[in-house]
Image 1 (cartoon, rainbow, N blue to C red):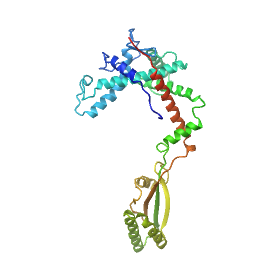
Image 2: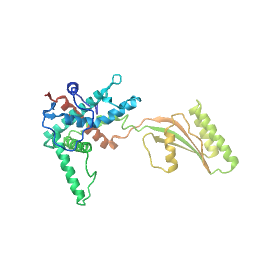
Image 3: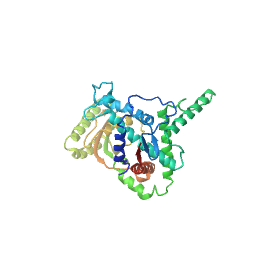
Image 4: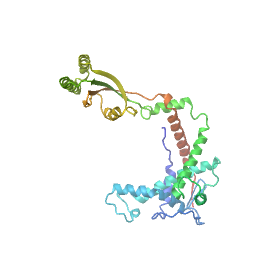
Amino acid sequence: MWGRRNSNPGIYHTLLKLFSIGIALAGVLNFSGCREEVISPIVIINGEPVHAAEFDFYAASHRGEIYQYFSQRYQSLDRSNIWDRRFGEESPLDMLKSRTIDHIVRDKTVLKWAQEAGLIKDISHQAFLDELLEVNDQRKMAVDSGQIIYGPIQWNPFNFYQVRQSKVELKLKNILESDSSLYSSSRIREVYEFHKNTVFSNDSLRFIKIFAVGNKIPVVRERLKKLFFSIKKCFDTSQKIACIPEIKNNAKTYRLDTTYFNLGLQIHDGDNETRFNLTDDLRSLKPGESGEVIESLDSILLFLCLNSIKGFQPLSETEIPIRQIILDTEFQKVIGDRIKKSVVKLN
């Protein structure tokens, strides 16, 4: 439902068949911004040509992850010529082609949408390479003249492409946000209810804190220690709740401080150092379990976990993340719908 990505199997299988006929994938090309050769494209997606060099550019961004996957999965991997081999039913080359195809189709679809929206004029790969050269020339001139620039002195093609593509997608999302019906109260409520048990869950544990302080007399302190271990033993058996009356009686007799409190499972508070250090230990307890008896110079402390309480962040506190979920979901839906309608022509 929310956030599900759409795909077009027909396009995928067509392109996979196409690119299995001789794309050079053995090495990473050096994309220095040179002009592409004037040759016929191997495929046209939504009117935009894709040449072999452009396909290699996209493929290069996936080679490392695929090589790492096969290296970890097959420990005895021969590093030479892995692209020509198969490992059981898996093939590094087939995986590389499939991921590259997904990448190209998606990004071409995004760029075509941006072009239709008037955000970018030329969405060809050559326009990207020309822009990269221009930006790097400007950055070099700025550095040479003593100006301060942010980021690298020279962008490499892959990082520049990612930054450029991210900016385009952000502008498209801004266009989507201009639709006043996007964040309707009914939709916000629907998303909240859908994610309430996961993203907006705020479950807590119910504890009893038993605390004795100011008892430095050895005899009294030893008696309190035995009492605390007795309470712990009682609680750690099947009796559980039956121990509560005994705890209350002992609290009166020995002037113990007993406090009930809830501890959120997903909230990290910024209390004092001692309590902060205890927080993770308490969250690891399950209902019906007790913590360790904690002794300091003048106090003894014990926590008993009674039960868990189902809770959620209130809707009023979740508007910002809900809006982001809605926007991302709507963006992916538009992209998915456009991918389904993509037109692929083979040369």
